[in-house]
Length: 311
Image 1 (cartoon, rainbow, N blue to C red):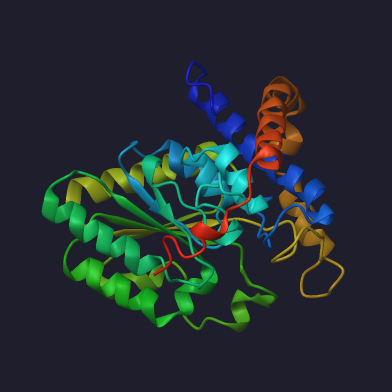
Image 2: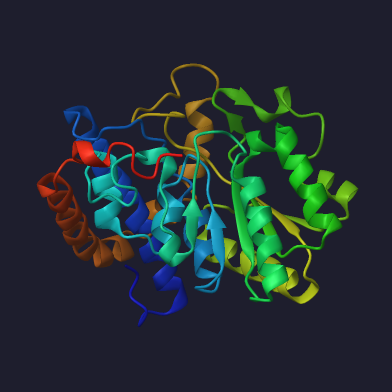
């Protein structure tokens, strides 16, 4: 977990580095087949989750996408339970049944994620409706990629949230890709400006790999949602360093260039600030070692639990 005694910039760096080191360990473990599910890694995109969750209140809710490790960890999900979930063990956050793409930690406000593109966006809108009717003061964050904005349910959700003035922050992680398809080949609309059609204010954060910049953008958007009780769209430009699903580098495939990745790496705080990496890495690695040991020593689910929690 992030050390609360640190100043904000140090906390954000630590949280961002923690996500990356967890995923680098997943890369090491994956070829052994001990991890029992496909993995969609957030390497290169960690700052969006770290900055966003640090700008929220503990009681605020987050609904994620299938690329969910970063937001699960940043919102406070238990690393031991996450690793056990990837292993398919009974002690996992979802009993070993969810795997990488369906992590959830409702006890800290990470309400779930889904392999179906855009499917958690209406869930976030429904939670925002409940929060408004109950007068809880919460805001709800719907996290999704640029490809999800092409789904009908996304536009239906924006319309409903605007019509009922719901406290929901639509947070788009724009890595410019839907698997291998670039955004220019998929979208005739502007990713930021289209929300104007629903009367939803929107903003673009171009430095989505800087956790402090993301934090400040999300804090401002969250303040606006709370003050006006109306939705806001925030688009954070970011870059997925690895392949869409899996642990490999796919820049050789041809749909994007190595030079593009190198441009993002030249502004990656985790590659630029070696002193802070050295400062925080030992404690994070000890935590990761403990989580891996916990997962490996945990029991498998038994037959009696096969149908538990299955709708």
